[in-house]
Length: 129
Image (cartoon, rainbow, N blue to C red; front, top):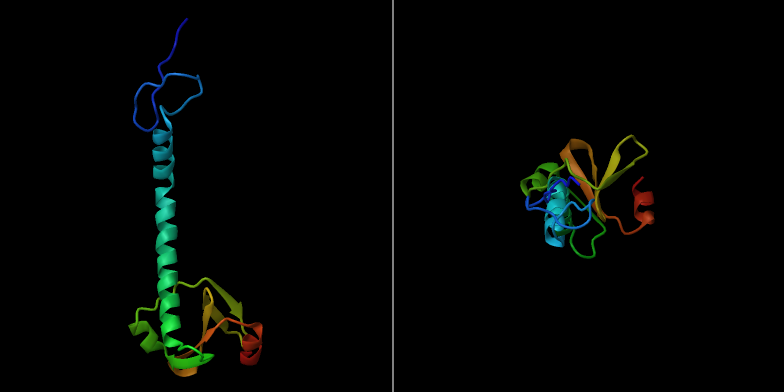
């Protein structure tokens, strides 16, 4: 009877056991699967990091107890806010959008200003729009 030696997909050592076995042990199986998913995980990690940084900037600008504040867009950009990253958005009645970083949001106003608010209640959005 002819047998083919199979090799571990992770470390390359000879595999003993079942014919459909692909890894020599659990450690190699985990290492292989983690390495395969690493690129995707890094993209998600980087995106979450940018979203968290944006959220932190919005929370610092919006003081405790204040429902909303208007500031120049340039000022928030200088703090490191990246307008390309947001968690979701909602359309506004005038064709503009409310942009959100998790539970904080902003609306781009005229003349380079933005309105920052905490998305704690639907009533606040109703007052804005």
